[in-house]
Length: 108
Image (cartoon, rainbow, N blue to C red; front, side):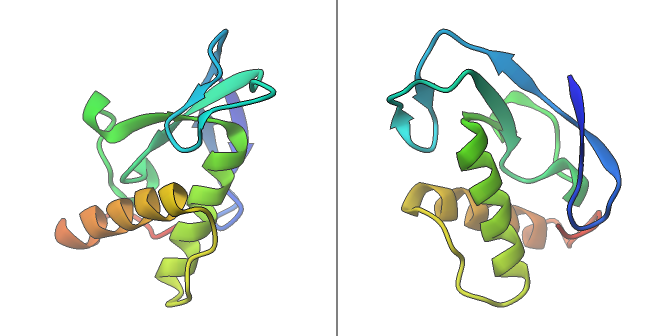
């Protein structure tokens, strides 16, 4: 695991990276060229109180991961979310789970 700085809170958090021989990404499908690593994205982000269970995780490429979190920030700011259809869909699912749980944790 590496430490990456959260752009909003400036606090380090662990980033789960998986070396992969697969070109599959749960956001974009198959990649060409294939990504060198896959990252684990928590649909309901852990920093917003989300669980760490397997039902809350998806495997994404680094680009998809950044775009999902950008879409979450856009949604929380009341803006139209930027990103592809699947990226925005995962962002909406995460924000909806956070709202349904009573908004625990810190927003993105």
